[in-house]
Amino acid sequence: MAVILRRRVDFPMIDLAQVVFYPEYFDLAHRFFEESWEKICGIAYPVITQEMHLGFPAVHTSADHLAPLRYGDEVVCKLWI
Image 1 (cartoon, rainbow, N blue to C red):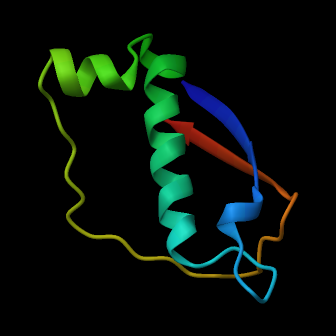
Image 2 (image 1 turned 120 degrees about the vertical axis):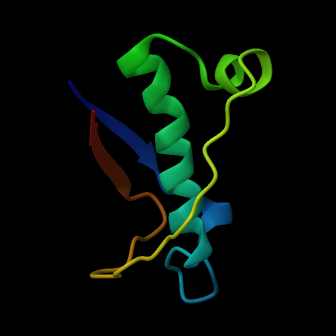
Image 3 (image 1 turned 90 degrees about the vertical axis):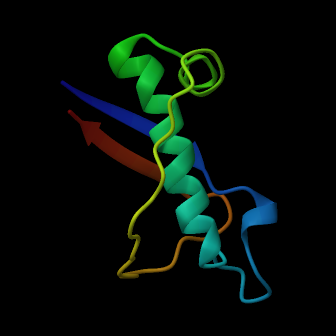
């Protein structure tokens, strides 16, 4: 099952060059990850972490930056399991 999630680039995410500051990409990825649980599995992420006591530690992360995101842009993420 796939889910498509969308978020707007907010002002606090950008730097002086008016593009998304690079650590914010990882924050966006995690926000999409959290939101996907409820959409795909019907379980809110706080329930998983606080009531079920489950966690998902990152072992490795990396990013290839192909084009900058700017204030007001819409970010579209497609996740599937």
